[in-house]
Amino acid sequence: MTKLVDGFGRRIEYLRLSVTDRCDLRCSYCMPADHKDFSEPDHWLTFAETEQIVRVFANMGLHHLRITGGEPLVRRNVTDLIRRLHDIPGIDDLSLSTNATRLGKMAGELKSAGVSRVNVSLDTLKADRFRAITKGKLEKVLAGLRAAKEAGLSPVKINMVVMDGINVDEVDEMVEFCGKNDFTLRMIETMPQGDTGRSCSSSYVSLQDIEKDLVKKYDMIPAVTRGGGPARYLQMRNSKTTVGFITPMSQHFCETCNRVRLSVEGTLYLCLGQNDKVELRPFLRAGISDEDLQQVLIEAIASKPERHEFNEQPGKIVRFMSMTGG
Ligand code: SAM
Ligand code: SF4
Image 1 (cartoon, rainbow, N blue to C red):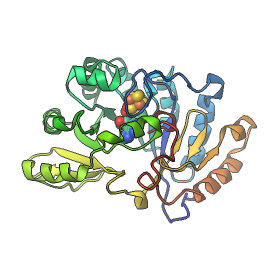
Image 2 (cartoon, rainbow, N blue to C red):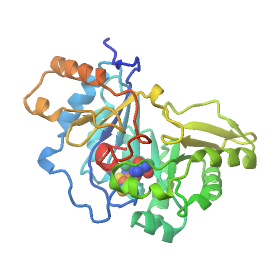
Image 3 (cartoon, rainbow, N blue to C red):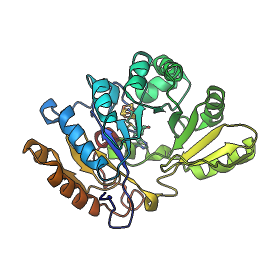
């Protein structure tokens, strides 16, 4: 089998697939409150086009697929798409990133379609703060989390973007909430992705000090298991509670990067923090064969950049996280 290896010897085994750039929330660090400039439906990859790309990737050893967005659960019939992608030979790990507003209704059908685990964005447990950060209702997300648990989606990981003056004072509360509910908390540093991410740079917090504080307070030790992604995990010595740290700014992890991202329009982004990309939609609309698409993907992966430059060039990435498939 041909394997996908980039110019720096990294094996690419993981695709983050954005199925929409739309969202029912407006998180301050992600999408502008008045954003309306969404992709045209004619430009969206069809389910068949998406399936062809994933199939050809999977023929070259890609096995982890994460469905994301925008908010993936606002894409009509997304469960049908997920079922088709789950059936592709080689895809053995199908996960979902969601804001969970629709998980209350959809968790069961998603689990039956093949989603095994979910990452849910949740920055606060206070309803007024939640509204201020996202413009949405906390209660819906909490209902979504309960439904995820009941449906047997496991593990449930909570992604918390930690921001100074906004939610940094809730870290302990989030650790305890996640411990009690058997969720894995992952704290994330704000990235200067689009104007939205940059406008939050004044509230940027390095997670290095928070990590040191938690180690002392909860007697945490490095966790044995890793998630296969960029998070470093710590575990409480006397319990199963684990906490992850995603530190793109204070300690980047590009040397172990194993992923690329595909937008709803069929743009293959080779790095979250660079503009390198390959437009796949024109090839698909011209009826490209699997063999030729394989060659296009091999060449694309060969051009994957070595690392992001969020610190050196914070103004470089104009697109919002919701457009790339964060
Ligand atoms: N809507 C889904 C959700 O919120 O989980 C999936 C897409 S969202 C773009 C994926 C992740 O990107 C979320 O965990 C969100 O917190 C994170 N994110 C968005 N903008 C970010 C930024 N500027 N810096 C760090 N993380 C960001
Ligand atoms: Fe929507 Fe997720 Fe972006 Fe929040 S982080 S605006 S939920 S896409």
